[in-house]
Image (tube, rainbow, N blue to C red; front, top):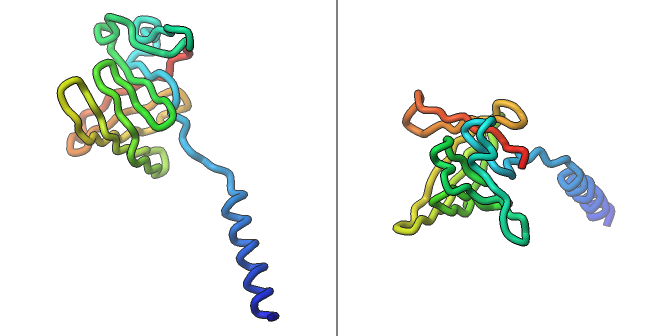
Length: 137
């Protein structure tokens, strides 16, 4: 009985320390544009729910994407995040994406530069990088 009591106390402490640890999940939610000065040219709020969407000519102003909970939206694709792994400043995302003509899995590698700036890198292309800025919409 004494061994069982020790086990229960140890398990309770272990579980409590896991549950009480603060989460350090990266918050990527919001609208992200390639040029911070062009946010109003890329994104618009519309509808009764005041939902963020893309302007008609968003791609002419650098484009961007929208992150909402477990989804990523571009002007021409909608993606559901299947897996997201943080490794220091890097966030690797695997998402299932759908366009009007196809379904595919896409890998996103993002590097956190500062609170409202990220950089997308492309696996296998070390010199390719696109910066995005969170829009205050």
